[in-house]
Amino acid sequence: FVMSSHNECFPLVLLEAKACGLPIVSFDCPHGPANIINANDGRLVPLYDTTAFANQMIELMGNQELRKQLGEQARNNVVKFKTAHIMETWEALFYELAETKAS
Image (cartoon, rainbow, N blue to C red):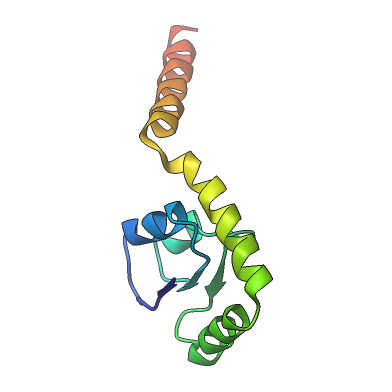
């Protein structure tokens, strides 16, 4: 999956791609892809570096094993964005803040 956006807030489409087990190539645009993609499940390319972007796509197209490996990791890593996990994180933060305030 490729995302060539130069500006994103929180690109849900990247989570959808990960849930489908797709390796990702994306520009490292502000506020989003770096929070979703890591070196184990995709490739972040410096913003506006179209040569590097093309090279990453070519690498993935030519390497079936790498595509498979990144795709499997993507599917495994998307779990941390599920609602239950996010709610547990928020709940832990609220408990921590309440304990700090109480002491």
